[in-house]
Image 1 (tube, rainbow, N blue to C red):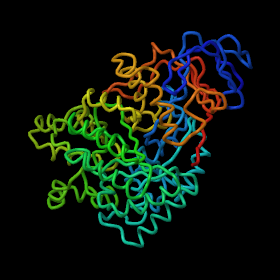
Image 2: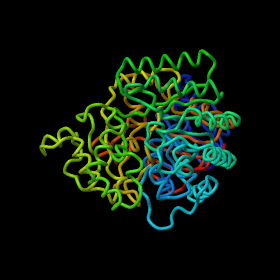
Image 3: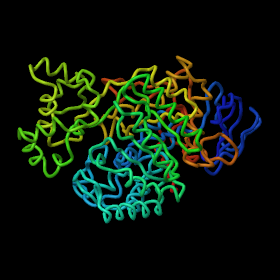
Image 4: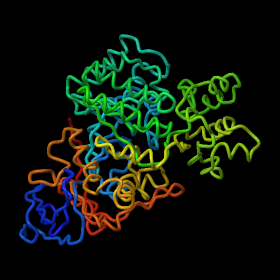
Length: 523
């Protein structure tokens, strides 16, 4: 399919313009022509009558840094039509890192044993990723969480001048090696002590290079709008291009509308500000984020000894964190605990009632019981309504993202779960464009293709036009849907007929070919 004509397709070109019929010719990894239907016959001709052809979908906010190395097939993504992911978000990622025992606290995905982590800097990670030959394209941000863990370590304090200089040097080297900017996760424990001055110093480097600063803001609950203002202040002082990650606050419609209004004010003032939002009605994170960073130091035995110490537990109870910030244990649901598997899917309030205990004590029991694999127990935070999401998506600047890792139902990642991985793009298009028609289909596709391509300054992707890279998805639109559910999320989406990544046939007639054409797109 490297030289092929996708004939008689209904094309949505990624610009937001109305659909049209066309023959799309692909040659040498690029779109060679977009011709009137029935007029092009270059190479193999595949009839796409009745099928929808669009640019491949771009996931502006992914956490696939590690899972793409473990299983580069990216099955959960390609079955939704995804051809590019931006990794390194929320201050989490795989590089740079000095000590894997410390760095693992800011990595999503199962951590392999042995000497899997053969790199320490971004250049080494990038080489490892290219050797893996992922099925999708990748762009990478530098995670502030790993910069801090590399130089400040597990202490929750302000960085010294020397430590900040080391962080800045690592960021410079990472961008020299192709990283596209910086991310922060200021609500996470490893970054809570980060000051505005530290972020400004790092963002000054990113701004000079024209990169992107994507931030999971410092508070997404009671002070969510003020936290967005903090990020806007960074953009104002440094000139950095700002991307506010999963912008919708957890506090309700009033905060959602206020957040969007503050973004509009910043843009009206001339700041380069964009934002994204995931496509779940809940947040999703590790249960271990209840704990201060120092509790997680050392071996599982060390952690367990702290978690049975009454004095430590009192400090944990008082520790501000992104889970209890929700303010209601009835909205916090246990997912994927090994030791408490019978409780998975229940709220901590319900579990506590059944056990005659408190929700906090239940959470500590789970962490103690699962201490050998603390990356496994996760929680859902039921904090959004569809109205909140719809309002966010309808803003002209909003891009949807997965906020998840690539996974596969078979192979080394079989059994792993991350809500959104198998469903994010399919849910968004099905629900927002086909069922509720909150967005027109061309507009919804634009936010998955042309808009994120512009945000990432990719001048030859995100559009069906002559000369553009052949990242193309062909869908059976009426059949295109997610199949994953809240209780059984790891099911492949349905409806992708053909998928090309850089012209390489990744899916044909609904089946995976085994060919992988993804590239690391160095900034």
